[in-house]
Amino acid sequence: QVQVVESGGGFVQPGGSLELSCTASGSIHYIANMRWYRQAPGKEQEWVATITVADTTTYNAPVKGRFTISRRNDKNTMYLQMNNLRPDDTAVYYCAALVRQTVAGAVSNYWGPGTQVTVSS
Image (cartoon, rainbow, N blue to C red; front, side):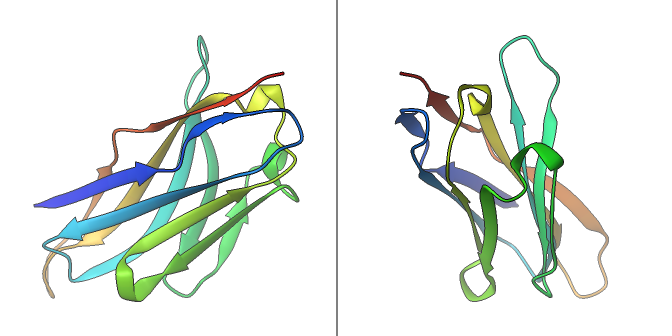
């Protein structure tokens, strides 16, 4: 089994910063990529950013230039540095990891329970 857990959410004023972390643990042979998503109240889930095992990064337009995704492969951990936060960044942030558990096995997606980020004055 694979477990994915996020941490680092909280309350911050507009213009402030937060760093989220996500760690995958358990039976892991290889993590192909890790992604952040978010879901604001009353809205659909939105993709935020992706980082591959080769450290290739992509961002959704609303966060580009303000958020930075990074990864420590040796610890199966991913980070999301969020700067210049705005009220419309308020959401539950979810981590997802695309994991291969064995050398010849298929890849599967694993999700964390989410962490709340609230941006408000």
